Image (cartoon, rainbow, N blue to C red):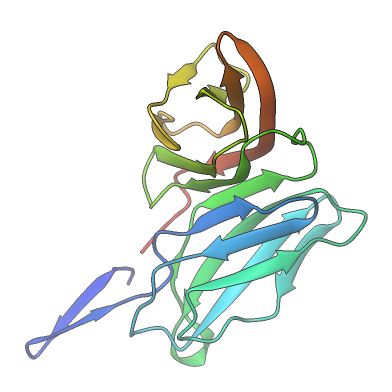
Length: 190
């Protein structure tokens, strides 16, 4: 049975792993974060790349973040976090979230993150780019340019796998661009 909240005899328990967020932290480095819980006994973190699927060292059951350093031959990867219970039973799994690192310009937005939060809505956040007066988030492969009023934006993916890049604007010109992040909604079950 999957569920984020269990109620037993007046107590409430939360399964960790929801709110999974993947952040491109520069060439080959990826930050991973999630909400903690009390029902999981362990996590399984899976990285999928061009070399296949790799189960990464397990974060502690009490952990809410970790960092992955990609092998030198890998610039892109997708991640899934499984919350595990007794005997390794899967209590819940995140959506699949991906990064393409090392493509940003030197003056582009940094630390681009994507979070699906078990929904079709992708939340993007990023760090300010030096000299930027505004930003435009672009859903790649579509004509959607998402209006932003700061360093975050939400996009309803309609359930489709979607990749994003954030452009740093200086007036009407693009002065920099971020790495690329992607979200594949619909896989999460908690």
